[in-house]
Image: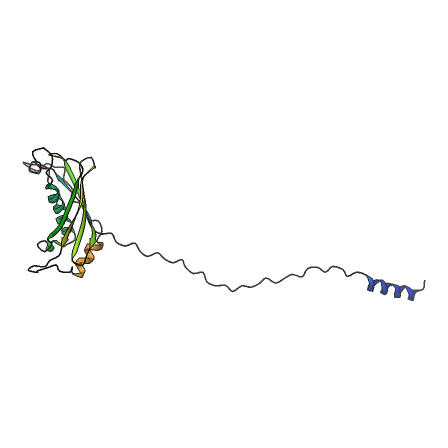
Length: 200
């Protein structure tokens, strides 16, 4: 076969050959718009706790009745003693004389005897526009509940004929001052009597 014919045949074979597969072309990475990450939403600070206080006393002989255990009226005195400590801790002792009691209720759950150590926990549960709601728990030496209940007082300024709204600063303290320092019995014997309460 002549050389020219060979060249012509080679061109024909090339035209009739199936197309060779092409290598995949590298794709450019898609660019996404970058945004600065947002900081996580901060949680609101927890609300301050309402005021509360723990006061220790002993069952005195005058606190008992003919049955030998504490008289029911003694709980009222223990609760009011705790209230006095709480208001003193808050710097609100001046409120005495302008906070008449309007409600008191108690459930008596266990007996307490002469000489027993008594712990009274008093806590604010609600501050109204001119009222204050307390809840209390009285516990014996073993920690069991001896009495529970609640007390409501009203604010009535001197010589007022009705209730008086709390001043703003007083209302703020009564609503969010938190737990106060307890008043606990000392370990030393008071001369001529039972252990006295610490005045710290």
